Image (cartoon, rainbow, N blue to C red; front, side, top):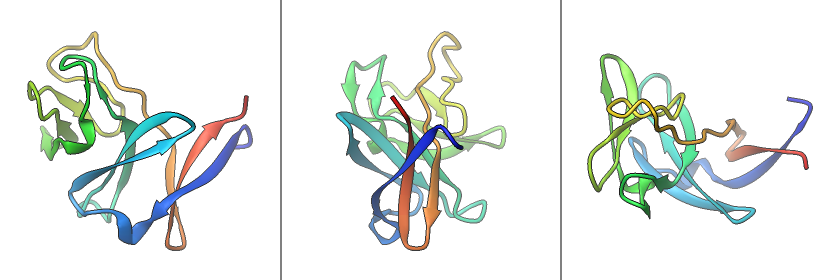
Length: 114
């Protein structure tokens, strides 16, 4: 990831397993999700729900649909893939996803260099 800057946004201990938290980075609200399965997988999606027209994805319910880890919007319950951001019910919709990683006890997001 040579063209990206890794930025620490929180500690791993700030995350709530199988739930979301929202971080603000460069004016962008990003929803972080740490799953208990598989192996504490970490995902980062844009926090904006295009159907509900609100910044609420981090408050969604985490689960799976046909083995795909998803978050259900707390407003109208559309399911978004945590891996790709794709809306399962409305294929024309997708949330931006962000590279995310653990670095020791830190959670880092990669932001493209401008």
